[in-house]
Length: 160
Image (cartoon, rainbow, N blue to C red; front, side):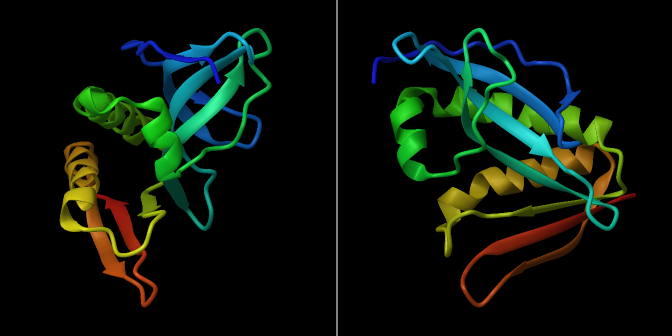
């Protein structure tokens, strides 16, 4: 892969895709050989029983055909491949701004979130605490927070 990391600090506006998902994203870089832009996408939705699901990950979009985009990849391998360690703090700042914009645009009074990996150590859970702070700043509070028997952590936020 001829991936070139080239972080774009400009966030997209909140948009709604064909599946009813609210999205805010920014470019991490590109691969000219594959004609792809590598994106960090933060999504909300679509609503299930009055709750939007918050997710974030990396996806690939064709350079010219914006409709041609992959699903979110949550894997550690792709993160290591696409985000240099020295840029993690910048990515975290942009992630939190995306979450803030989505919280403001959220059509539901509830938001859910869960971890992809099981039994995350405390340092890996820090970003989820920062997300909780952003959601709180935008009028949501934790209604429920727990870890299931398999080690997946879950959050349910309600608009206050």
